[in-house]
Length: 69
Image (cartoon, rainbow, N blue to C red; front, side):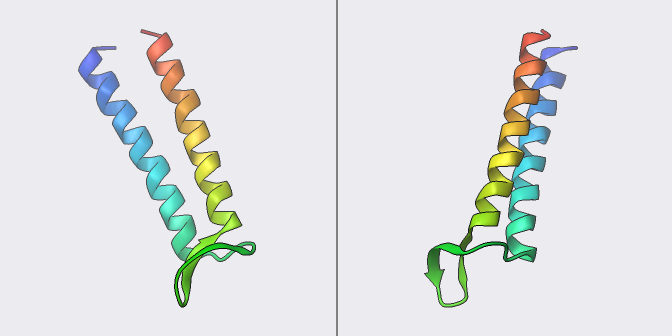
Protein backbone atom coordinates (compact mmCIF):
# COMPACT_ATOMS: atom_id res chain seq x y z
CA UNK A 1 0.00 0.00 0.00
CA UNK A 2 1.41 3.43 -0.90
CA UNK A 3 2.43 5.60 2.10
CA UNK A 4 0.00 8.40 1.24
CA UNK A 5 -2.91 5.98 1.13
CA UNK A 6 -1.82 4.48 4.45
CA UNK A 7 -1.71 7.95 6.07
CA UNK A 8 -5.18 8.79 4.74
CA UNK A 9 -6.52 5.47 6.04
CA UNK A 10 -5.02 6.07 9.50
CA UNK A 11 -6.45 9.60 9.66
CA UNK A 12 -9.88 8.30 8.64
CA UNK A 13 -9.62 5.55 11.25
CA UNK A 14 -8.88 7.99 14.08
CA UNK A 15 -11.55 10.38 12.80
CA UNK A 16 -14.12 7.58 12.88
CA UNK A 17 -13.06 6.58 16.41
CA UNK A 18 -13.45 10.18 17.58
CA UNK A 19 -16.81 10.55 15.84
CA UNK A 20 -18.04 7.34 17.50
CA UNK A 21 -16.95 8.52 20.95
CA UNK A 22 -18.53 11.95 20.55
CA UNK A 23 -21.75 10.50 19.11
CA UNK A 24 -21.99 8.05 21.99
CA UNK A 25 -21.48 10.87 24.48
CA UNK A 26 -24.08 13.06 22.78
CA UNK A 27 -26.84 10.47 22.56
CA UNK A 28 -26.48 8.51 25.78
CA UNK A 29 -26.14 9.08 29.51
CA UNK A 30 -24.71 5.79 30.77
CA UNK A 31 -23.36 5.59 34.29
CA UNK A 32 -22.66 8.19 36.93
CA UNK A 33 -21.33 11.64 36.10
CA UNK A 34 -17.55 11.86 36.53
CA UNK A 35 -17.06 15.53 35.64
CA UNK A 36 -19.60 18.37 35.37
CA UNK A 37 -18.99 21.15 32.85
CA UNK A 38 -22.18 23.13 33.37
CA UNK A 39 -25.66 22.37 34.62
CA UNK A 40 -26.92 19.58 32.38
CA UNK A 41 -23.54 18.93 30.68
CA UNK A 42 -20.94 16.51 31.94
CA UNK A 43 -18.90 13.40 31.30
CA UNK A 44 -20.41 10.02 32.20
CA UNK A 45 -18.51 6.81 32.88
CA UNK A 46 -20.08 5.31 29.75
CA UNK A 47 -18.64 8.13 27.65
CA UNK A 48 -15.15 7.34 28.92
CA UNK A 49 -15.59 3.61 28.31
CA UNK A 50 -16.77 4.26 24.74
CA UNK A 51 -13.81 6.57 24.02
CA UNK A 52 -11.34 4.11 25.52
CA UNK A 53 -12.80 1.26 23.46
CA UNK A 54 -12.81 3.30 20.24
CA UNK A 55 -9.28 4.64 20.72
CA UNK A 56 -7.91 1.24 21.74
CA UNK A 57 -9.35 -0.29 18.59
CA UNK A 58 -7.94 2.54 16.49
CA UNK A 59 -4.52 2.11 18.10
CA UNK A 60 -4.44 -1.64 17.40
CA UNK A 61 -5.52 -1.14 13.79
CA UNK A 62 -2.99 1.68 13.32
CA UNK A 63 -0.22 -0.56 14.60
CA UNK A 64 -1.28 -3.31 12.20
CA UNK A 65 -1.23 -0.88 9.29
CA UNK A 66 2.22 0.45 10.23
CA UNK A 67 3.77 -2.98 10.91
CA UNK A 68 2.40 -4.36 7.64
CA UNK A 69 4.42 -1.73 5.77
